Image 1 (cartoon, rainbow, N blue to C red):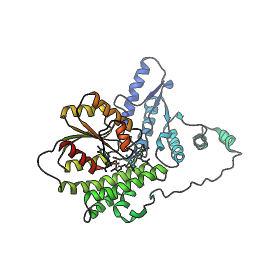
Image 2 (image 1 turned 45 degrees about the horizontal axis):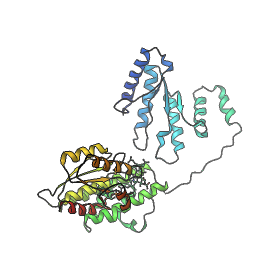
Image 3 (image 1 turned 120 degrees about the vertical axis):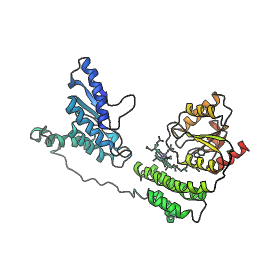
Image 4 (image 1 turned 90 degrees about the vertical axis):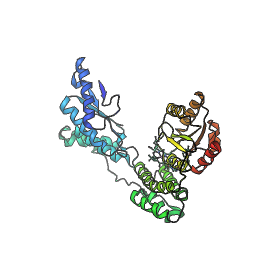
Length: 369
Ligand code: B12
């Protein structure tokens, strides 16, 4: 019997939370007479590059389940290293820690030499492999070659001509405080939108290309995104100070579509539209079509803006447009996001393709007059 330590609310963040779920599973298996030794609890591996404390919670949960419930444990290990370079290093170390925490059954590829080496070495060190017999049998005739990992300039993809710009550099290198300070500096000599279009977006493009080529990894991408957001907070204040005050020119609903968490572009669009005097209802990111339909129905907004940044989520943009049509809502839809083109926007039934935030304001003017 295999039980996952998650419930209807998802995966509990803490070891204690997962242990509580395990207790419920064991109560159920006890009730139907399954021996504890036949119950395997999976305490679930999360990605350490996205949430660093997650690894220790999993390990702690394994120990709690083993010691306090007397069950066995099973775990898929390699998810730990998603988004990091040289994943094998992370996987083998995590596997070793998990075995030490009480893991009985690892879900792993037994054809990976490093993983098997970790298991064999661990069995020697914990006296399970008597007289090192298995270890010696496996490695007596193996000549170890020292492997060289090609080193890339991970933290610093090439900056090009704009490299001199402190803000560009701060975003590219993912430095939040520096980005904030550099944005303040940049605003002394340039207009807010100029700073966004000429520096922030090109810097993120460089970061995105480096990520695609594999010379930077998810944690660095996240740091650049965080630095951009810090810079944009400063820019936003400058935009707001110059904005139109007074009566709303009309209501606009905006959202990043289902499955997509990219919202920097959408947030810029929101600030610009608000600055032009529109009343913007921002539904956030990863928004399912039904919620967009519901919001348009409730507000009667004549204009909807949708954002999608990935080829995998553009179909959800189409699904949202179709849902709005199916609900017979008389709104226009404008769309944007790095992977879109004008032709594709037309193909999925959008009324307008906005290449940037300024274009979205121009289109809003056409709609609201
Ligand atoms: C920052 C970033 C992230 C951040 C996002 C943080 C955040 N809060 O938004 C983080 C690190 C979280 C991230 C995660 C991921 N990302 Co990412 N990310 C980027 C990056 C580098 C920049 C995007 C950005 O913000 N650009 C700046 C903004 C201002 O530009 P923009 O969004 O295009 O917006 C402008 C216009 O398009 C337009 N616009 C945008 N939206 C809208 C909406 C409306 C209504 C209108 C009118 C206009 C409009 O106006 C905006 C202002 O001018 C891009 C690469 C790139 N060059 O785009 C990759 C990129 C989009 N990501 C990518 C990938 C693969 C991912 C991940 C799957 C990575 C992973 N393995 O986990 C995850 C996805 C998670 C998910 N489910 O969504 C790929 C997508 C590939 C593809 N073709 O599908 C890209 C292209 C990188 C790459 N080259 O590989 N990412």
